[in-house]
Length: 221
Image (tube, rainbow, N blue to C red):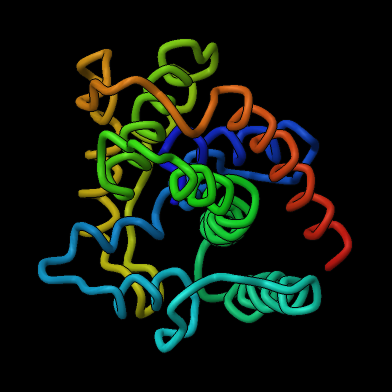
């Protein structure tokens, strides 16, 4: 699914749109934390489904309009159910990450998949073609980002805790550390030309996704 700069960009736009947040550090930490499952030794697809609040038996994320609405409502209900158990700002960031994944699948990944399948001479297999484009574009977003220093400082100053029964404080801390150093080299490790996803695709996605999620949150209250 999308890489850190996309998730943080969506969270930042929602925060700037007047969404009430008391602790931006925890909000931004929440917005990257579902992927902290990658820090768990031997974590499998089942474990990732759980931390992304999905049905572990589901093998894809294809939605009709009706099932999409149901999916969104279930994730917003997760916030309501757990708001007295864990910091609410972290919780909102966490759920926004998961909704961003869903919209990314619909708006960006499906188009990538179709374009890749139409390519009669791909130079990489599907997985590496996807990560070549997304990782190179995420690095470009970071290099051009005007607010990254503020968000990175927020993530450096954050306090950690176990998140319900889904993630340990150590897993969240390890993923945050990895994210903070994700872009240190200044260039992506992938070197093939960007072919299937464009920077304008991603910039449009960030705007549309953030506003769609914001409206869903407002309507749910």
